[in-house]
Length: 128
Image (cartoon, rainbow, N blue to C red; front, side):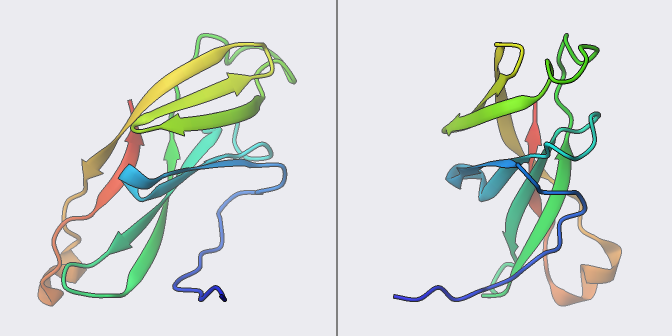
């Protein structure tokens, strides 16, 4: 078989050495941005589809993760691995800490310039 590209997106961060985990229940890929912002070390790339359409769109959103060790210097606060089970995201840090986050879909309000095309609000992955 062959792969057919449906949509593409240039990431707003350096994806070098990133870890990626797919969460099918959220239609999202969670990326640890090793070379990205220390404030937002995780990003969610969500696959969106307009109601009644076969066109896809990718959206990137920074995920804020609350940690009690963000003040630790490099390399103690680096994400070294991730795994996902249902709506739970497990993150292993270089400081030997394993943290579990629950991710959910957040209903986003409808954009005003989309009001004429009959689309409704979109859902994107968010961390809690």
